[in-house]
Image (cartoon, rainbow, N blue to C red; front, side):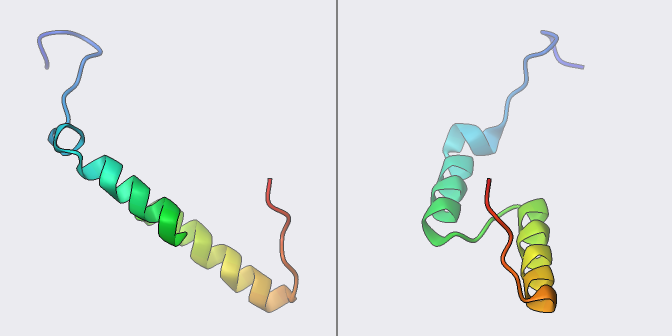
Length: 57
């Protein structure tokens, strides 16, 4: 356990990797997380199967 409860340290955030990945994902429209990729691929498959585009929120 850490010394202070609720406080955590992330090396990738400190170095700036997370911010860079975020910036790339926003510019390209391709998510860099596994969950984001699964959602995007799933939506594409559904759109192809139904021939419809879902409304974006």
